[in-house]
Length: 183
Image (cartoon, one colour):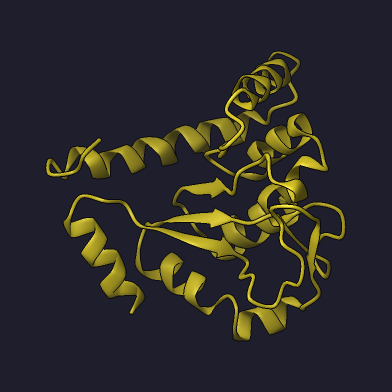
């Protein structure tokens, strides 16, 4: 089913994006407003919740959106959207995902409670490629200021910047090779 969805979207010039990693079906709180935790082990997640995401990683270069759920058995402090332990250690290293990762929007309650600057910089340092900010558009400038300041102060990991540039350039190749897409 995932392959059919990806093929259908991409045949029409639209890049597929799958969300919300790590799977939020068993999450009680709504991350739009509150912090939310998922208290499943990596082993449990591998058996169920992560199966569709692993299919994506193994069979496509679709974009994956990460939610602001805290995986308590991996990182008790940071939501997956800016958890180095989840993004770098699991998705990037263990799964070898080389595609584009995008955060859910950083002005949601679960992310905003960590502060926009902290969330933005930590997400980029963890290996997220695109930061989503919506509904509160003036916050884009705040996030840009924070990221720029972190870059100037050497707080952004240079190795992540180089890899991000490669992933985003590769992602743009999709649109160059699909002239029917509206971009």
